[in-house]
Image (cartoon, rainbow, N blue to C red):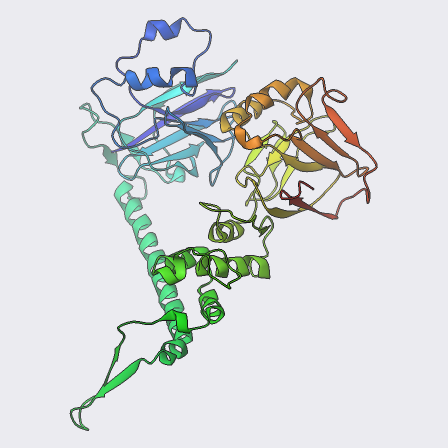
Length: 490
């Protein structure tokens, strides 16, 4: 069913939903100094405490909203924990009222702030849940069954006295609308969007057919015109038993396939037959991948997808998931700052492609494009600057480490008090290299790198104040960074 609750907050608590665990040893947990549902120490214990009640097929066992910065976190109590941005994300402060609408019919959790709808924070929810609040230092929260105002776009809810599987009763809003009307409106909007998409795809298919017709005709498709008499309509039947693509120049097929356009459509093309999608080393061919990958490579390198962050080369003999199709898919999505670290860092644009420091001098923070991890190959990004920021590259770290760091007043990857935390996040993917963070200073053009070890260099980092070509930068400049992981240069 549909459930709504309101939380009046003081300080910065975490609020969310968690699985019911009837076999949880409450006395044991009450003796702990601290406790939260995202502590990996207890994951096996949580799963064992669910008793006879099953969680269903859903993997989201705990999901919470952070009042301090608006981030969403969820876990499956196994190997998945994630901290996410979400559309409409906002923080809340003392005196605010946070509303949560859990719709288990469609599996979504929607957040409201002071009766104003912010957006859907998490989807993919199923199975039983209960509300909870995680209290940090000097925080407090009260809970009640919500009565969202009409301004929030919700009806008033009245829960039945029966079990949780009984229907919710809804009383009409002042304008006479109820929750079913709102759901119907949403369905109508979705149907309209789907109809528009179908029409667009139909036009695209017609254009592609027009482009492919000369090629098909060249493959000896023999139309047979059947005409009973001059008074009846003529019917054209095209018979195609087999097309031998080996007789057609592969560059011609690649040129035609390039009109498909997007990575998802190219993937569909690769799945149609071996000629398009099967990787094979062709004798006398320059390719070492499939035809669909070759089309993707040409699109990535031709500038058709001239988006910041596109990979511009692929290491030799790369296999598995890192194909040209996957690289084209990445290039279709612009770089974003997925993670903000430090309490004074905030987004300055709705698409999260830019960030700013709202505090004065002396307060540092980091904006990470953590959704785009560079493992090999050549990568390029551009930064438009205001003031004198520092920017560069840093090792990827698990979300649980980033979540801990996000709460600090100020944060810098070259602050030695955090080195142990950074190194605790090390994985085999870091390799043997000892440059774990490297950045450029706009004010004077110098560079700095660190191994996250305080005993090395000066306080764990090394300066390079006189690299060849060094220049300072100022407001309005665009700084480009080319990371070549084949040669190990920036």
